[in-house]
Amino acid sequence: MTKLLPLNFDSGINRLMVGLMWEPNENRAGVLGTVKEHDLDLSCALFDGNNELIDLITPQEPKRDAYGVEVFHSGDNLSGGSDFEDEEIRVDFDKLNENIHALAFFVTTNNKIKFEDVREPACHFSDATSLNEIIKFDLTELSKKFEMPEHFEKERFLIGVVKKNQEGTWDLINYQTRVTVMNSGVIAQVVQEVLAK
Image (cartoon, rainbow, N blue to C red; front, top):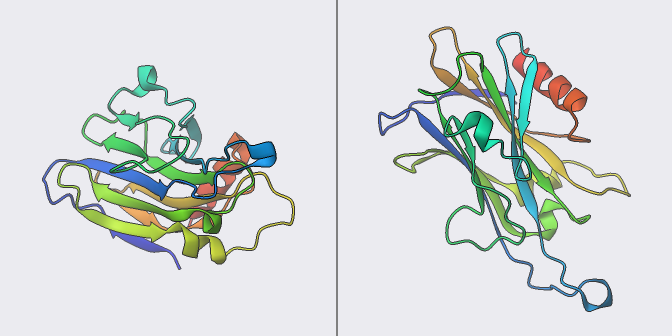
């Protein structure tokens, strides 16, 4: 069920943080004794007023030169276990380019693992200044809701879409779904379907 959550920042500063957290792999022995880390990724897709995809921000391509503090990705964490968020994306709505009308957030596993194989994977939307949570997801439980094909490389989910409303403020569309691949065509189709609801 899709639920619309108005983003009312209790700090009075219009900044959003989306955080991804997980604990390191305790069983680290991979093939031939190599280390197999649990590597998760947090990404963000930007859309214009016509719901057309503008750009994709990933840990591997944070595009800080293009977006600066408007949409800031903390970078790629390969193993988890940080004291706070392992990866985070911060959005400063007061500085955001007026052409951006929606931001969609995705989480991804690597190395042929599911989220339910990872220790304590979680994701949250929070006020970036007060750090008060707006909503939080247990990614293990989310993973159990969706059947995966027998052969897969990564598990991917859309975890929510933030969109500008007619008053010029922002709402979070609380909607999650599995995404087959992270290419521009599939991302655009999935998010456009959510925005049309």
